[in-house]
Amino acid sequence: MKTWASILVAALVLGLAGLAEARGHAGKRAHAGKHNGLSGTIQSVAADGKSVVVAHKGTTATVALADTTKVAIKHAKREKPQAATLAALHAGERVNVRPAAGTASKVVIFDFPKKHHRRGAAA
Image (tube, rainbow, N blue to C red; front, side, top):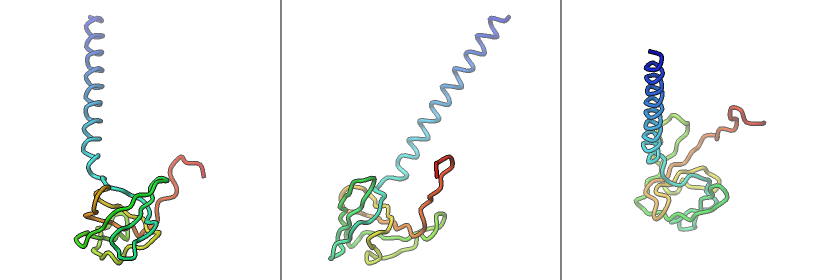
């Protein structure tokens, strides 16, 4: 009887571990496409307004803009973005540009402070 109970417990543990592993991968796949694009700070805007240089983690990327590029401004984290124009892009602003390569189809400007304090981080 003890042998069967031990085998049943082992099978249950392995089954739950496999389920947790499968759920973890499914969550990563579903989340991966949500935040595609390039997030960073605008270093400069071209005089004609057709491109911006975005700095991200020590690297810079030049992103082309078109007249059809949609621009939006978020004033708060849990707020829907409000429509804006290409003239709203200025150096020093935090942005998310989609897609990361080629001509941008959407640019979101973040007009609220970045979170500075993280739980467990040294001050």
